[in-house]
Length: 336
Image (tube, rainbow, N blue to C red; front, side):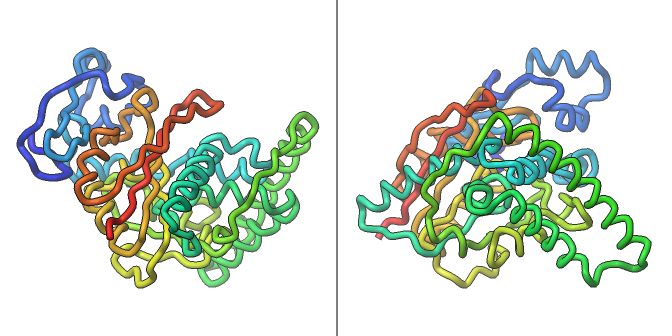
């Protein structure tokens, strides 16, 4: 089997690395298997490949570009957990379990960079706008009313010139009005029992950018709500600027990639590209027990250890989040 990440033929078959949860993996499995019996057989005997050259783990059989487009452009057009994260941020940072893990990993990375005399002033996040530390600090910094107002302004600012009729505008306003009522009711119920724990907010997060890259195994422009893509909505809500990876002209001190490196076509290439205009990179990944079939790659210490000849690689440790998921972080620093 040829590794889709590095092109090496030095791969070993393995099994049991990815979660056999059929609900999580339905999109992947339904593109290659047609009956329930086939699904069950695949679940019990599915194989993964581990590349000896780059250390990555990938699903076998590998999906073609057309099959990947079937998943991320048709079957699963929207990354639901990202939008749920945005909703939770309105109700308070205590609801942001995965983003809290991301913020913890960011603090660990900053401590490591401080030891090396590297100060972070220019910061960006990669690809998913609602899974990293920036959303967590947005929820920490502003009041409930201010957060809801900021979202409303971002929704309608991004749609000022996109309506073809007044009817479309009416239904968007009605949709957001209903959404706002539901959020207020949820907030009132939650705030009675739980308050947010305040944390130190890093100043550089307020002026951060979002770096985006095209991929056949990521939602990207198909991830739409309130008539806006997630990246377009976050441009005014969370980030100063959204920049395509191929057009990046700034030099950043740190970029954070939270659970997105396993959703690019070539993770090694993206790491090299991002560290071409950033001094350091934090990568948050799922651990073994948190990977489902919708992740075509698994990134573990074996993958990052293979990068140690070109970058300084620091394991930031494993964090078990309150919702049962287990996350791990790695800090990559460009060698001088």
